[in-house]
Image (cartoon, rainbow, N blue to C red):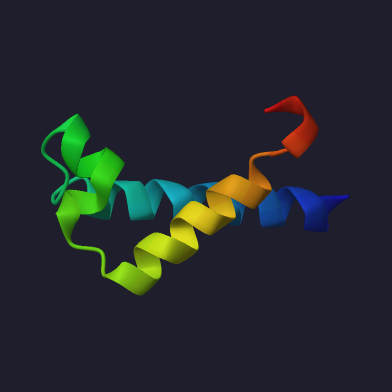
Length: 62
């Protein structure tokens, strides 16, 4: 069981570290939502596709 807790603590620490680093670059909620408008076409398309399919889209329920 200690391996699970160790992994969880390391993961949470890494997420806190990434958020502290990213905090310097995100000034407004618009920066957060649209990534500062710096994403290219391919990455924007991949992000939208992942949101569409990973968000539980069901054609019969849309």
